Length: 291
Image (tube, rainbow, N blue to C red; front, side, top):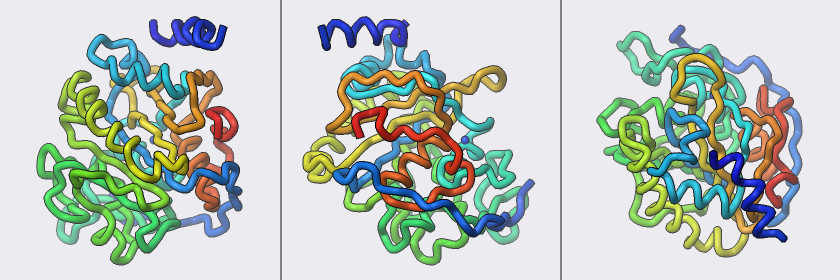
């Protein structure tokens, strides 16, 4: 197994009911900026795979990223199915979301509309961007396969004003990392939800080098996290892979226990934001991956 091989390799190299939900906590804890160089955080959200995806012969690029940069070997998703994890990741709580329903649309039953703080509300005015592959227009609130709206959490938050229409956008040929926080939602083929492991590996092998070529990454100010919303198993351990890419991360395997709330906490700390909900008590990754 790849996880068991990591320590050997390193030794050789080194000798996450419908209706509106409202915020109930208005005093998030302060954060701190622990790595002055980091100014941009990128998340790439993949779908429905356990940690053993990195052992798959269909994922050589993913395995190479984990070996070259960093890997959290004990990271847990929050729930099943997909949407609760996306909401937990971006707000620090599931806020009662328990199904893969659509965002609140007048006249449609079984929807969610969330009037709660999120990382998007913390970074208003273009300080956050969501990049959704195969979305036909900005802030699209309806499924149009292979675009699945439940993989685009920004559209569920009702308190963002015009930000969703302005900054939740379809993919462009060249990724824009000018925002402090960039959420990347590949389409349902490329995120492995409906596609294969090979499809996801091929997508990342094409997309991640574009991120590494940006001015933000080359200047040493960017960290990229690749993770999965949930495991493919509806019962048992909900462990998911978490790959960490930064100019400061070299062959790290971290066995500390993390959750999706840890990723939110770490991102908020890096960007100097208050800690939301369960991110307050989640273990931080700071100091574990070179930043």
